[in-house]
Image 1 (cartoon, one colour):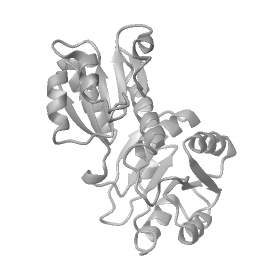
Image 2: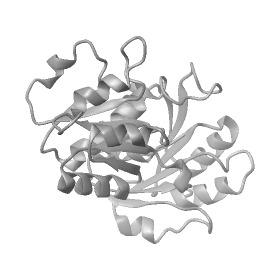
Image 3: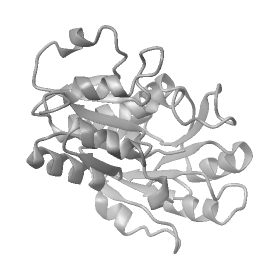
Length: 266
């Protein structure tokens, strides 16, 4: 399964702060996350991480616990508000088992064991960003309401698990099985995001995206295309000026959701 994210500029990439003293791991994970469309800033210590926060506002901090000097716990103490809650979402990297019990008094968004599978990290990063949008960086116009998504998919075996997952993430999902239905609904309802299979009856996904991007009322709607074959997307160019990324995943509904979690943006 392949995906293309439409209309993503450098400014729209989600910013992550990755803090780890292991240079090899820092390079490997940051390169992987950048390839997946994130803007990654790195720091090799808790002290350097605090310096980064003076000029950078990350949507998520990925934090190693075992570092010389300040360490992960020391870093966390510096970013707590008056209620003891971190000022940013935090995903903890740890080689220790049962690390969660050390944070009974601190609200941590997730834990992942080291060494970690990059795909597992990607899924966890996407999950946290989705679930914490209501607390971090949400605009007045979107706060307090469910976001609307149009899902262009004719196969119920793919659509149903995607609808279930995004519903858990506070999206109201409308499923459209044909390209013209996606186009009509987008014009009438102006959703927050459109996710669609490139192969749709009537109009394919890139044709729908081409039409939406030239209409004043729909040109700013984020669009994610996916397909069973990367070649399908590469042979289906969208209009000049519309950017995107292409990545390959396995053809399972769970993997489709995982990649879309990373690709969808406000």
